[in-house]
Amino acid sequence: MARITQEELDRRIGAAGGSRLVHSSTVGKKKIPNPAHKDNGGSFYTVPEEIEAEVQQWKSPEGHTIQAMQMPDGSWELAQDEPPAPKPATTTTAAAKPVGTTTNIEGTPLPGGGFDNERPVMVTREPGDDILMTQTITLFRPVGPKELALIQESGFRAFAPRLREQPIFYPVLNESYATQIARDWNSKSEQNGNAGFVTRFEVRASFLAGYQVEQVGGRQHQEYWIPAEELPTFNENIVGEIAVIAEYRHGERVDAEEEGTAR
Image 1 (cartoon, rainbow, N blue to C red):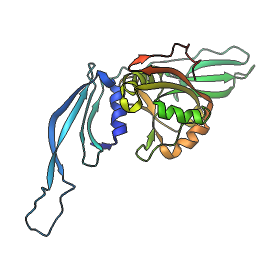
Image 2: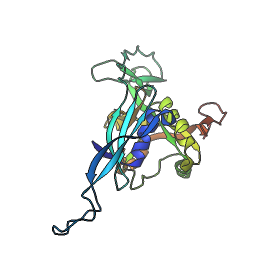
Image 3: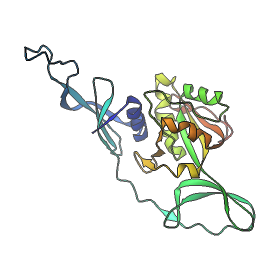
Image 4: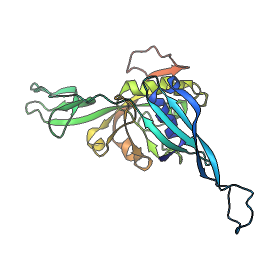
């Protein structure tokens, strides 16, 4: 079992379906060491050595099951995070590019040949010899009002440093995943002011090549795990501005602008 923070548990629940999950407060119990217990030399203990922790469960209609128990320090012991069996990824071979400077959305090249179309990249090619000049990967991130305000302070160029209890930064690989969290989790949380936003941005593929794509739920629930101390370097590799492409309030989309025009 892995020890995770409240933020990590919330993120996993959001990825699995957020408010669509059925929560069971107790599906089992487990004895754990009692932090209030102290050895007083063998005399009678007034505080027990162990206490019972309740195992809680969140389950989606599709069968994604998360089980965890809260520890005395507020963290969670993750017992299970089991998504439905993912479908196999599909690849295709890219067609030859015509002569001339072109910018296209393509799949990420695979080491053995072919392209992964589930991981789109923006590619600009030089006229005549078809050499790759610039390659970026489009990423998304669901944010609340506080994080959005910090992004705005940066001129829509960077994400804010993580808090001490937030050791990992989680950008996601597709808009539907980011929308799911912003709509079903952020916009229904009073802590977030019942507001959620979807951001879109480009990151240099050469930088992201050093990180593994993590799948935390269904096939569309893919993300990168960027350690907090590496976030400044991540920000340096953002190409262009961070765009706000959607806003949600109480689970409903409220911005009516066309995609890509909102800030």
